[in-house]
Amino acid sequence: MTEAGCDLDWMVKIRHQIHQNAEPAFEEFETSKLLKQTLLSMGVQDCEIRHTAKTGLVVSIQGTGPVEESKVNCVALRADMDALPIPENNPGLEYTTKTSSAHMCGHDGHMVTLLAATQVIMKNRDMIPSNKSVRLLFQPAEEGPGGALPMIKDGCLEGVDEVYGYHNIPNFDEGDVRVIDGAIMASSTMVRIKVLGKGGHGSVPHMLNDVISAGAAILNNLHTVKSRCIDSKENFIFTLTQFTSGFTYNVFPDEAFMQGTIRSYTRSNLELVKEKVRHIIVNTAEAMGCKVDLDIHDVYPPTVNHKIETEHVIRIAKAAFGEEKVKSQDLPLTASEDFSYYLENRPGCFYMLGIQRPRENYCLHTSHYNYNDSMIASGALLFVRIVEDRLNVNLL
Image 1 (cartoon, rainbow, N blue to C red):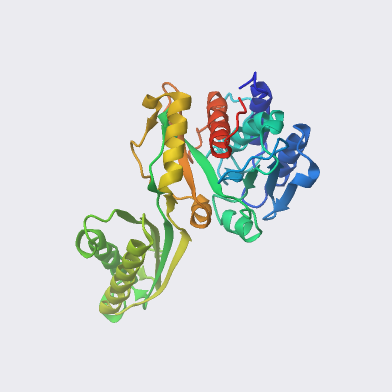
Image 2 (cartoon, rainbow, N blue to C red; image 1 turned 135 degrees about the horizontal axis):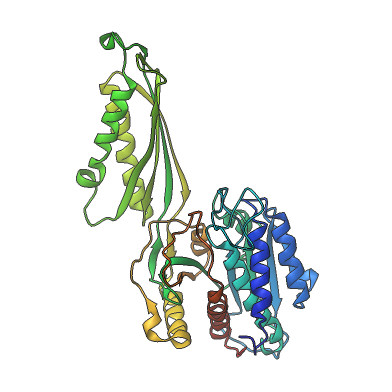
């Protein structure tokens, strides 16, 4: 990669700078400035960079070589930008975050991987026909509320034939490319339940409508959604993660609050699960003399890879890293991603890159996580190889 024009030492420094100045969703202002400055220094023209979705960037790199006709004329590559609003706990790390946010999901690594690939593309721009282009999507707010849809509505996919992206996974072996066609990540749906009853003194439960007992019954009955209400061949998760109510030892409260998440791999199954969940919650509460204020809100749809584009990634990755490094093990994931919206609008593929260091087993979204700098070159190489293959050019 270095010989082809990618300065990995520079890329590592940029990642550390981004990591140290982590910014949350739709507040990635300094991150966006640094990305633009870096792109300009690589030779990208200011007119080729468009601001979108508040802090995002859409970069169109048009080739300068002789015209060459083919089916694919524009390939998009995406990197997310936002950090998480959580603390970092990496003592001794020289570039630990200075802000109240932290890159505990590795989006700093995603951005720099795309920058490294861009450096190679810009050094060899004349090898890309003038009727073909690479579209870079630096996207804010993947962690929520989501930056993909605003970017799509603002035209980031106009003229794009195929779209590709990846996520690092610290639990997958270093250098593994893991990918499958079809659903690779689940949908995400938020469920909020407010149980409404009639509180009072703990000594007279027969005179009240007990929201705690009603909430407990709702919790127990909801376990039957998976075991009794949905075909066992359908894979989904429904988890309640919060149940709060009451304020002292001898008083029944008027309300109880519960919330959780549904994860599913198809929209049809998700709608059926939501229907069953809604029916059980409302009727269980009513049976115990209570009412519910229920909010079931879809966050992201499932991330569903297209078969042909996934086959391209598998073939390209095997050629780049060896057949033994390309796997489908442990997929699909129950996490969710708003890359799903790109795949609903264009053919493409989202894949996982393993970054697990020896003797480390930290998960994403934990305070000890840190992107593995040794994987910047691998991630960039795969981006470049995808561009080469899909645009029928040689850049390395």
